[in-house]
Amino acid sequence: MTMFTILRWHRVWINLVVVCACVAYRPQPSHVVFIMVDDMGWNDVSFHGSDQIQTPNIDTLAYQGVILQQYYSEAICTPARSALLTGKYPMRIGMHGIPLLNAERRGIPLTERLLPAYLKDLGYSTHLVGKWHVGMSMEDYLPTFRGYDTHYGIRGGAVDYYTYNKIEQFGNGSLMFGLDLFDNEIPQDEEQRYIVDALTDRALKIINNHDISRPLFLHLTHNRWEMGYVGEIQLNDILIEE
Image 1: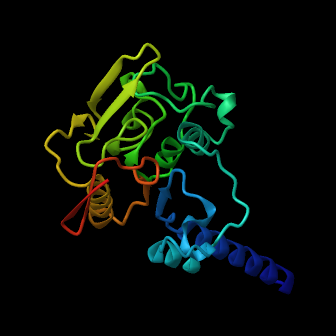
Image 2: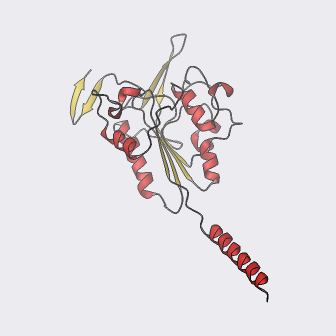
Image 3: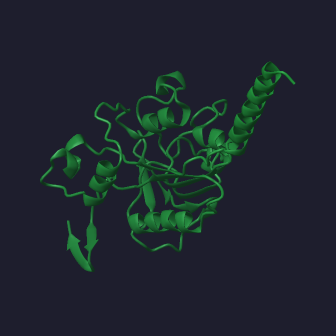
């Protein structure tokens, strides 16, 4: 065997080793917890300098991660969610302008494939906890029909923090009233907790019970910030009448 032949086989062997190593090593996709907040202004967090609102947990996430200084989003509910879930400008899919009413027969077009559906193709377990607000007038618009394995939360824009009721007024003055808190398809008419606690507890349960052999996508969208509370606020078992 000549020196040239030895070198050639040596090169082939190295290439085979590299290829095998690349095939054997497939890094596990990262777990993703995406917390979406409605109507929170730039100075509503203390890491941006607010001395009125202290946000130590959000500050910790910011300082241990990456703070995006030029991050642009739609300013209101339905358009912002539509952009996130589709990667398209809301006006391209008819989801711009005034946010959806619960009774409105509209949603992200069913021709659009949403972010959680693509993540499921990559092996992710997908969960939505909290607010949906991109279509609820028919079953096919609901989160578990658009790529999420589970949904615990509200289908519309906002609810009362303790009763989970939504009241909508139409142009003719008539009112539409009803419960808007669901565990997948099941109305949560026995739930009595403050909704922030209910949503947070469900998010923690999903994280703690998750099979870590699969990547997790948890989309957490709280009711807070979106809707001011009128009536009684319960703080450490003290009721404050507003």
